[in-house]
Amino acid sequence: MPELPEVETIRRQLAPLIVGRRLGDAWAFPHPKFTPALEVPGAVVEGVERRGKYLLIGLDDDRELVVHLGMTGSLRVRPPGDAGDAYVRAWWALDDGGEALEYRDVRRFGRLVVAEGGRYAGTLAVQGPDALDRSLDAEEFWRSLRASRRAVKTQLLSQRPIAGVGNIYADEALWRARVHPARRTVTRAQAAALLDAVRDVLTESLRYGGTTLSDYRTVEGREGRNQQRLDVYGQAGLPCPRCGTELRSRTLDGRTATWCPTCQPR
Ligand SMILES: [Zn+2]
Image 1: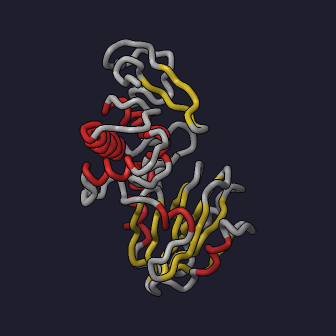
Image 2: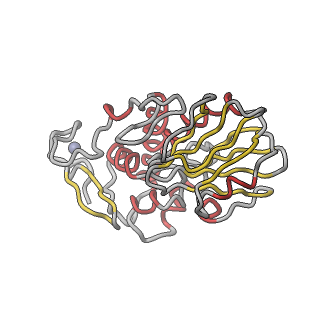
């Protein structure tokens, strides 16, 4: 958390509030994950893009401020006279300094990176195409899944075949596509169904402003509304919405997976 729909919701709300504005004085919590905030004052924001779960704030000097929200990160434009709270990890004054762009992160799993000329450090460099990028087709997705022997759900969470899917949408998409999360090989037809299901669950959640289970808030400070629409995530012990079988869960490579033993045979 947050996954693609939550980060995309933030991107859409944030872009009109900061594009064309100059980043002024900055402050950062003294940790290498947040001090890159101090490298960008003076730059003008040219755009806000997203790849997977990363926000890419494009600057007019060929650099990008890359924001990963971790578990509890959020962004907002802070009004004049509002100092934020103890969980603010960085801020940048906007234009003449009345308002500020604020990054808040209670658990500090997020981070900020400044990338130059499209050269990304760390995990962004090794992740696959964005899950909503239509240039990735089912055949290519299938080949990329076949290249690894790890469980299909673990592969989704790795961000390598496609970027943007975390635990919630992986469980939801695997259930819709009727694919068991621990399968190590999938057929061409299963891969195609899974790619469609991934895109459907992400697009639907985006329409509802994302999923709020605890901390996620939009730039406007609101909760998402997709949490009422989840079919299987976090619902072990409840009946499968499709067939009524009791949903099961287990730990798979360190993360909880929930599935229907009837609809998703091993
Ligand atoms: Zn079922």
